[in-house]
Length: 65
Image: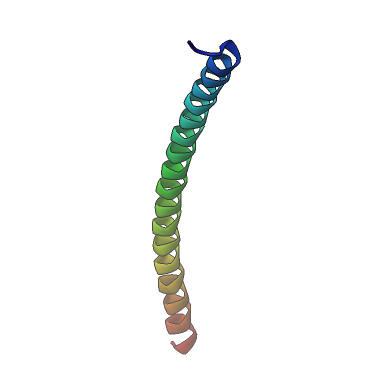
């Protein structure tokens, strides 16, 4: 025979575990989005840095002319 309190506690634990699993999956998805955004921002920074360096070089060459 099972104790009704024990059965209730097990049901609560199952519910809590399911909730925690959902939270974990949501956090994993959020982390994935942050990583993708970070990758995109790093690429944009690289492109802007290249453009800025080219602009500086053009200004230096104009200065020397």
